[in-house]
Image 1 (cartoon, helix red, strand yellow):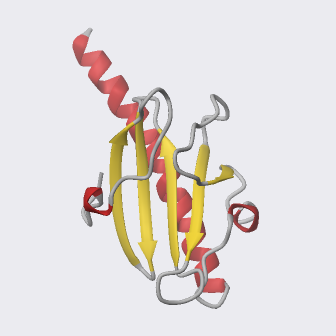
Image 2 (cartoon, rainbow, N blue to C red):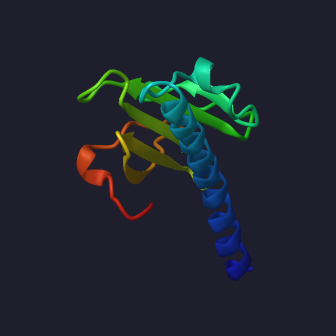
Image 3 (cartoon, rainbow, N blue to C red):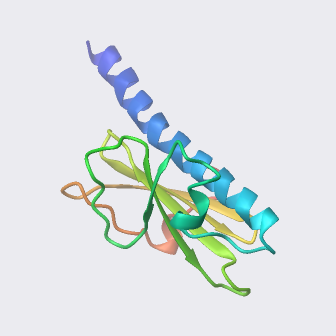
Length: 130
């Protein structure tokens, strides 16, 4: 049984990570098509309608449903709307983040606290993966 539980937790984490990757791909598509600017959750919905898009605030408490919920925040680093952060809460109770600043992608994972996710410190992000 412990092996099964470990596999189940891994699968739960991978589902949230997949949602974050798909959301980031949708954002990158929008970035390419819209003058090097990322889009808000309302603008991205048509590119990837399979995900439930929400505005990312910190901390955010994900709704219990739908399971494919992702959160997005667009900001300006050097150019208008050139930075996007997408996030999702996994069933393993970890929050998964991907941050893209003009093509430089970093990832972070932090444990949720009572079901809520807070944006991790910049030092928590890695260029390799979660």
